[in-house]
Image: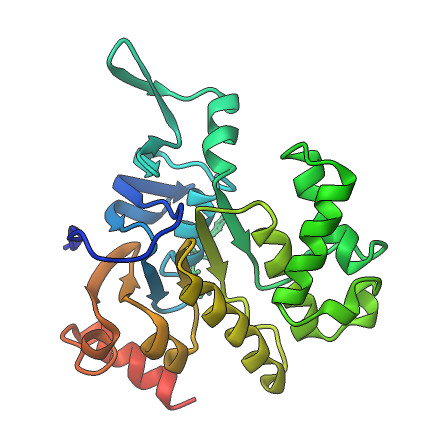
Length: 271
Ligand SMILES: Nc1ncnc2c1ncn2[C@@H]1O[C@H](COP(=O)(O)OP(=O)(O)OP(=O)(O)O)[C@@H](O)[C@H]1O
């Protein structure tokens, strides 16, 4: 049974953050149905942590929202605008690429692996999208890049290439790069999983800062339960491509109701 999500209006300081609404989202890879008729509503500025066993569809829900994978059925809206559909004469039709690109420009995603260009400096990596996608001048993009590197605690690394940075620093550059497009929704896919344990904290601190600013809606797939407990407005437990449990972290992580959630949390704790 899938839990249908209805988020009540809440007093979140959302300076430009956009909500996400999914209705009946289904996605299969061949015979493997990964998302099953999924309904989910994320309020503007909300911070949602997605947990669940390996293969349950957590990454796929982020990738379909980022349009890195297309959905087979259903609808996704970002900031009230359909991502995959356009309204023609009052009817929803599959959207043209131009429309999809336009809506997607409100969304940023940070991955487990940083995907920085190795031959470019930290600053150049950040400047790329504002110049190429958003038509900012070199000067504007540079000023923005310097500001964002400062924000993620890397003012000193402006001219360093990824090879000169630690994993945690590279991930902070990747986060700054994503912020450079001023996303209204940010998707974080296990962004600390590839890091040495001593570097995890510095990246989580940057995520905390972004969350506290409240300028963007955040959907995070993470195994950092302490972080989820502290920062999330809501935790979603995924299993078999559906949300089987959803609620405030104290409830879902503190006193889970579903047997699968209890088993999953038990397994996570025993690591
Ligand atoms: N591009 C793809 N082609 C084929 N199958 C895929 C593809 N991407 C994901 N899958 C399959 O979809 C299912 C869900 O994958 P997904 O990565 O969303 O799970 P997950 O919950 O994020 O898992 P993990 O915690 O291991 O990252 C898995 O069975 C996976 O093998």
